Image 1 (tube, one colour):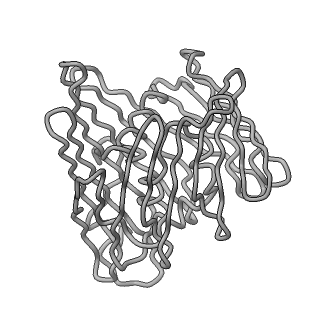
Image 2 (cartoon, rainbow, N blue to C red):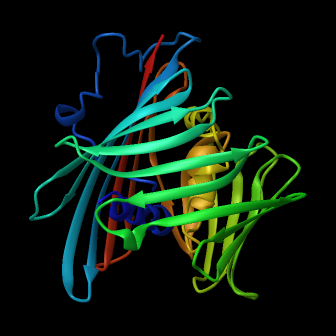
Length: 312
């Protein structure tokens, strides 16, 4: 189930996010107007405590309409994700719920990510190993089906990180710039390049464009507001892990725009289609919600709703 969810999340981010619509009755994450949720406060010392990411996707798959709804609630402490709850639904089928917990080493690096369903059964896990502070191996185990399992190994050479997969001819090379940002991702089948994505940034630290060539051609540009992105500090915790654990064909530009840019992502142009997002703020200028609607015609429609909850 988790693997399917991740594939859907990557697809949504690339075409349209990592995820998901959130029902507060299921997760208890939304606390508008009560308790210690200070979404409307102008206090300068508020921190993000719960990030809700809701995605409603409708696709036409060879003439068959499929609607999926993914509701995620990420719990944050000291600017780090400590756990999450995800409710995944394919229309017409029962909901499935998974709870994720993260384990870190003494240096604060994530060493495991384990998912347990609502019946208390562990469904899958990531194990991350480090050598001299750098990610050396990522192992993914999906207990229900070994087909989805993989082991990634990593080597480092200057500003290049090369990822190989055990039992596969596919390798991926990530290029890092002088600001420790990913600027290129290129995948090879043996020695033949099969997918290339190049990333550019502006002087404010926001992604400016991402261009893909190979198995998937794409040309994306990104727009931002002037306010601080509260997700950047949260997802910059173990920054490279967000990219090194993906599939070779996953595009990373939209991930950078949403989670790693200095300001809040406010719009994008995907292969000539321009979209403007609806952002709301509290009196201190902190983002409290973002609504995104992508309409690519009858074959693909995506609605993304995010909510940002703060505490003192």
